[in-house]
Amino acid sequence: MPTIRVKFGGDKHVSHITFVGEYKAGVQPPTGYMDWHEWAKVQHKAGLRQTQCSECGLWKFPQELSDADFAGTNKAVCNKCAAKPEKPDAS
Ligand SMILES: [Zn+2]
Image 1 (spheres, helix red, strand yellow):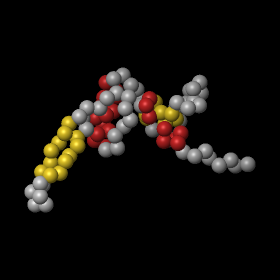
Image 2 (tube, helix red, strand yellow):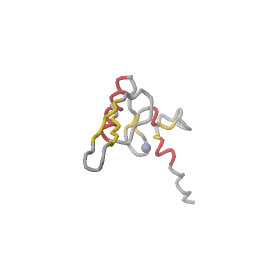
Image 3 (cartoon, rainbow, N blue to C red):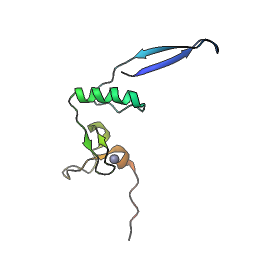
């Protein structure tokens, strides 16, 4: 579960409240490492399975994969790789 820590109090006495939330299946991943694992658990429980990106080789859940122009090619490319500018033409 994601936690959001809110700092309050003066400079000398700092306390933190932790709010607990829940990730939903199919949402984009959080950036924090620990949060990511919680998020990934939710995706897996929901039946989502990771596919290896053919560009960077990382394993991605469906919502992290680009669905543009790869249908039928049996290749999965993640959003990050899909967003990269085209390689300059060598010709
Ligand atoms: Zn990739």
